[in-house]
Length: 271
Image 1 (cartoon, rainbow, N blue to C red):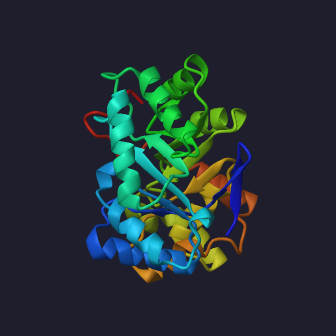
Image 2: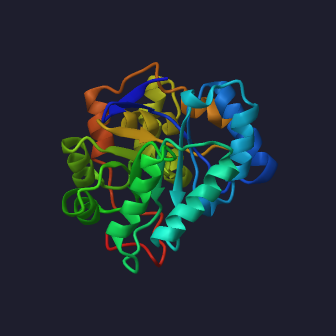
Image 3: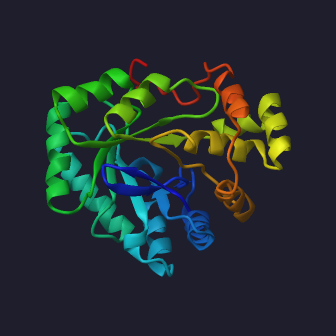
C-alpha cells in the first residue's frame, strides 16, 4: 500500500467505494478487502450500509486505527442539529467512536453552509470526526468553504476518471494541501471499452482499469476509491503499485476527451 500525505495525515491511495453494496454482500466484500490489504473504506449515510461495514471491520483482524474510514452526511441532513444527530447514528451503525473523515455528500444551498461546517467542527472537537471535508463541490464552492468560511477542509470527493476534466479543481487542491478522492474512477466500467486504455494496458501487462487507477494515483493529492463486488476485482484494483506509467502514456490519457460526467442528479450544483 502507498499513501498520500495531506495536512500531515497519511491516506491510502487505493480505497474501497461501497455505493450499492448492501447486506451480506457488503460485509463480505469489506471483509475480503481488508484481508487483501485495503485500509481505506468509504461509505455514506445514503448508502445504507454503514452497519454492515462496521460489522466487517469489527470482526476483521485489522486494528481500527489502521483503517481510514470515511462517511458522508446526506444533503437533506445539513441543518446543524441534523448534522450532529445523523453523525451520531452513523457512528453507532459503524460501531466506531470516530470516523477519519466526515464529509458533506452534496452541496445544498437551502442550508447555511457556515452553520453546517460549524456543527461538523463540533464533532471534530469531540474527537468523533478526525477531519472534515466535502464531496461533489465544484471549484467555486470549494473556494467558498475554504476561503470565505475558512473551514479546515481536508478533502473534496468528486467524480474523477480518464474521461472527465478535474484539472482546475486539482490545481487548487494541490495549492491548498487538500485531498481529492476520485469516485467512479473506472467511469462505471467505461474504461474497459476505451481503445487507448486497452493499448496502454497491453503494453504494461495490466488491465485498462489498472491503468486508469495508476493514472489517477500518480497525480499529486489524488487517491481513488473503486467499487468492487468480487475478490477478483478487489485484488485487481489493488494490484497497481508495481509499475509506473511512462510520460508518453500518461500524456496520452491526459489527451482523452474529457466531457463525460456520469453522476449528475437533479440536485447537483452548477459545475
